[in-house]
Image (cartoon, rainbow, N blue to C red):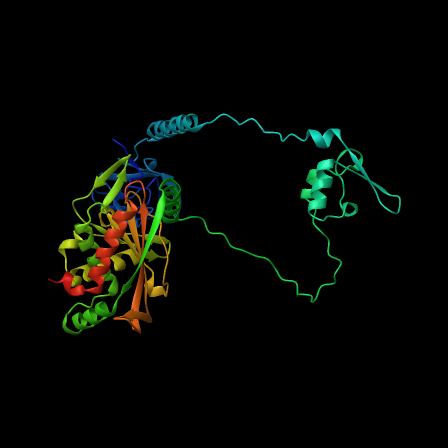
Length: 414
């Protein structure tokens, strides 16, 4: 008996999938567990295996095309089996669902609002120039023209009998009589357009909702990284695994969250979820946008283990090999642009998390130490908070603890 294979939901935020590649064509035999297609989600391109044995009888989404989750991806059955009724029923089912959705989101057409202009319609002022010419203008248009120092003789009226009204003043553009200083060679205007990828759609949808729904506020702090630089140099000189400053930040954040659990929170359906575990999401730039793989139980791991996991996640992200479980469950996120020379920036909170930390680059700068101005290495941090779940004092105390860990790395080792 033929079975419908539907577009799978391969991530928690996926609403549509794109077929990146078909590994079978119509008429090919396929076994349960055998690779059927590669599906591009909003976060990665993932391999999709067949749940059924049989023959591929129908492909519902061509390579490169997209379709909503749960739509007909393919049909698998016995060779020569008639699937017309099955395909027709699936199509009717989808059409019915679309109609219901349209009815659910339909809104009444708003009544147009017409701006009242009674004064302009009823009254007219005549302006006479020295040459005897007359200009008919509404009192409101005359008043605005005087305020803007506009010569009414240069304005073309669009009211009755050529009368100048307010819209004529608003639309008036002065014409310059001055000759151009130089003549630029004529060029050709051109542009290219690229449709949103599934990942870019998800970024736009998720972060737009976060920015407009979550009341953001930002806390900034500078950290002296002299001791961290020395500690990293010592660790990398003796250890088999080389660690980065980002690895140190991840560890410091995890330790600070353990001391400040009210920052390790999510906003979920008008409730505050206090997470007892610490899973740190690390933002990674990829060609299509941004993914946030998660280092789980980061507070229980050392620098070298965190460093190894981050490197592995970055490789998987660049090669589109991240699995859904690699990107799920984060309780706090970090975005580091220091390697791009960015000193200071703010990030948008990644729902449902309550906070995200923005990390800038380390810059050598004069600092005051023991009453004297000396050279130092400073890194700027910015904590973006969702005010619905995290308050200013709570975030500030967290940053103070984070600063202490980074300025005294030995505290993260003992």
